[in-house]
Length: 437
Image 1 (tube, helix red, strand yellow):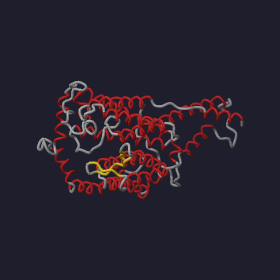
Image 2 (cartoon, one colour; image 1 turned 90 degrees about the vertical axis):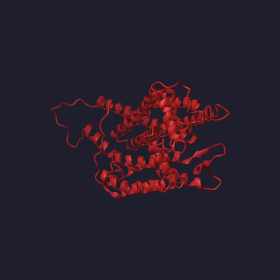
Image 3 (cartoon, helix red, strand yellow; image 1 turned 180 degrees about the vertical axis):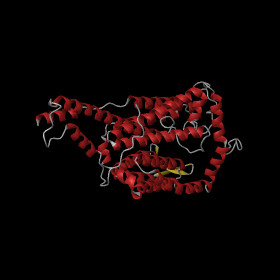
Image 4 (cartoon, one colour; image 1 turned 135 degrees about the vertical axis):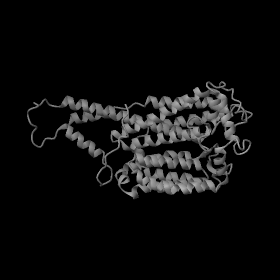
């Protein structure tokens, strides 16, 4: 008994390590963001460092929030999954409360905190991913086998999208739909069952574009920005000119011309065009490589967690990786003229208080996943070493005593028991999504 107590105490003392690749990629993107916000916003106001100062404050607050998220046990967060979902609805409804909600350019997406405005959908992205991860853990067998379990998160995201479209926020709506679809696939839902809801939603989304004049203008200007270069195509045409001027190595840091009140939103939605102009094709490739490293490492971490039956952590890693990957893809695609304008910022780089802070929180949660995964690996290694050291020397030819279970059989039974969810259905075979070194 004392040996077991000592071993348990020794295991509890073992901690983990944060993933250095994740941390390095996030720090590099945030640092580059600070430099580019300073460069792209220097001519926007009479005070050349106004937006830089604000951005530094928000990055500082985001780092503090990320540090808090890095120290919170994920199993404690999982206990409050229903409160997280209620928080998503409350945050999207509160913007319509008179005196609290704030309207900017006809969109009601912010709440007034007195010292600043906060875009609530940025917090919703984090809360929703954590809730959906918890749901996929609790009902992963049903999601694979029944329509009802698969359609519940579809209904939830449908209500969230309806609230977002009332603000309106078409870009964030599409982002949440994309994250939900991909996470359901990763969670085991059958593709043939996901296709039907997607096909039913497509006509509604097309109608939302066709019957909303400003969305239709965005689509037509995206298809040919030069047709109305000084009107609906003004923003995209200037973005393309900025990218073209950058060529291979750029015009030099701080030497952009398009940021001098020619390119609207040069420090937020279209900061990628300024990066391309000042740093050129080389700088663009470096940015894309950093995002590929961050997202790829998140997916790798998610697969490793799934293999260890740490499903909640794995789905969170997948969700955050999908969020950052999809949003950066859309933002870059808009700047390059590959996608219609959506109004999504470039994660960790663009200026924007709520976006920067909540992305930092997401990175903090992702680092917590890596810490707990590393801790689990180290503790498993100690258990295996202890089992080998404590195993009695038995002649291979001598049969085991009747009624005695082998250590490997016990370990297999414990692993199978840990992998069970709340479902009473036959557990499904977990997808591996391929193996990475």
